[in-house]
Image (cartoon, rainbow, N blue to C red; front, side, top):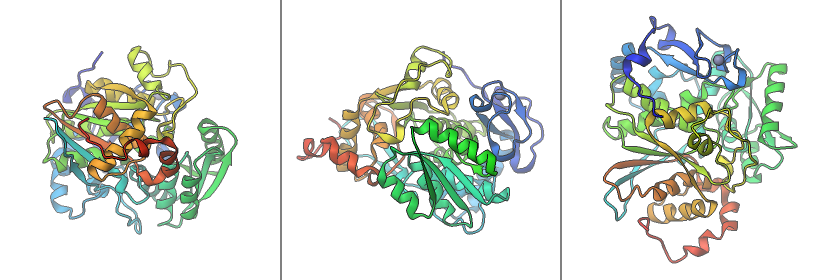
Length: 416
Ligand SMILES: [Zn+2]
């Protein structure tokens, strides 16, 4: 089932690099390659089933990339600009990326590290993608950016737009959490509430953006979003002295983050900055497990049955993951696996992570920590990184209603 990747295989047919070292945009569905796609959306043949990969000239960029880091004094996502499709625009000065990697204290023999990406400007890893979206929109002369989102991506986009002269329009399901909508509005964005779920909001955003000529940041449509998110993998390896961990635990909803994390490690491997790619462990909520089912059945990422999502972990609550091709590739090509955790395990993980490390994660993010506990990452002689993608302050009411606080009132040992 696992596909063995070699540098030669991935680098073949790469012509001389063009601007910024990008050699092609490759559709992951039909494998057609394109010189450029305005606004970096999907493959024009496969449309929404055809997420594209931005492919760089890794052979040429390896030493250039490492030398550029010696000259950079900042520790944020723009530090890795040689492997990004666009430059940071003026006034986009919020410190994005450069999040801490903590050693987690525990009783087992494994080394567990917590990558705390809740420390981004709007409180989630999505800031990395939204910063890139804003940079692309500015470079292409757009005045308005839109997105469909239930929360974190929209808050991140509204936050980044607040630094620029850009209008931000968010399409959100009417069921979206009030706290998250308040954060989005506070940044000055316009929120259009759509009757229905995320799918209806996505369709409305797609249609209106096309009609009005807006830059559409929606995950799954805009293939460039992986480029911002992959920088978290670059940081992990640099913080570990250019070593790759054995495993990385990543929460999975739409599939964009897990696909992006894998791409980051793959690019470092292709540039010979690291000597292996870690196993990527995709953690889904039990009631929102499309990727688990497709992976277990060894089926096409498009063939899964779409079931109504039933989990309180709102940021990973997705019936049909939009970035399912990239998500499945991440697990298969890294030799990793998908696992499920229950909502009870997720809320327990919110509290056990907070009270044993001081890192307060939202439920969707704590799912990664629940997954690490489930696979006994603390007890194996290996190094695991747990990716915390969003702050617990984003979903306080869910935690209050979960009952998890009273269960663990007397304290908790992470090794349990
Ligand atoms: Zn295609």
